[in-house]
Length: 395
Image (spheres, rainbow, N blue to C red):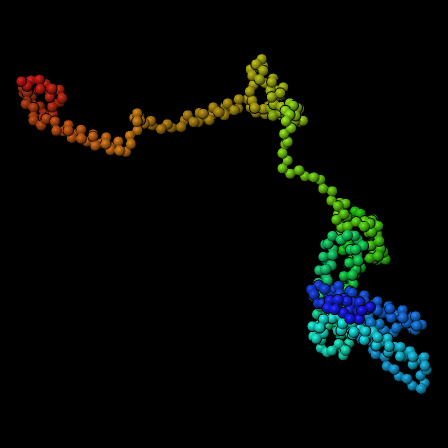
């Protein structure tokens, strides 16, 4: 076993803590496992030497500080008692010194220099407490982080129920340990852990194998029963046992087969009549409509949309609409010329008309007509006929 270490390499068989994000929980588990193995190896050595068990171990120095044994040998002390007192001191020195040595070699220099005193002058439990506060979030924040880790395990796609129970029990023990140190009570009970697991599984499978009694409802019994039901299936495989989804066709278009459809295929399997509202035939094949429109029908042919509509209702409605349209007042017609005049043409037309009127005024006869026999005549202009007559009379 190597006693030296490189940066990031093994230290006395233990990986060095580099204080990376999220590294502490995993390193802590390795650290606890390592010191338990050292305690077990020490116990085996005592058995081989036929000595009594160790009075104190390295694990005992993490949460508290056992009192250091005092050797007091007098004349009345026997050799066996003196030997036993020396062994007690040896057990204490071995656990206390070994743990301080592990801290010195496995923790970073940055953390060690931030301690209130040198490692050799401090108690192991105080160093462990500082480590928990700085990296393990030993306060309420650490408990909340563990609670989030619990939720992530529940929501993950675990491989089998055995792995799920193992991870949840590990987080449960860590939460309860922290809560016991903070408030003196455990937070997550066995019953709560079992209910969290059962909530992830379909109840129609495990309902008959789970008994909610105080004596039976434990983590061990629930785990055995569930593994007997679901075996080594993963979360996804268990969910697929109940998710029997039917395929849904989306945007289905009729495929052209190149063959002409038959009459039965075109009309479909079921049909209804829009004339008599019967089933099994269409309107064009309706026997009731054929009787109504038969030329030899008594009273003449009967034309209607269906048997619920009054005969000739459509014709009457059309006639009433036409009658209402005929009563509307007509607009006076304006006689239109052969060709509509433009603005320019109308202006030219007005100018020509005014010129013609002016020319006509120049030929107006201004002299008075002589009075005839005994008659007085009013002055009146010559007409065209008079003007023509005068021209004929002129030599």
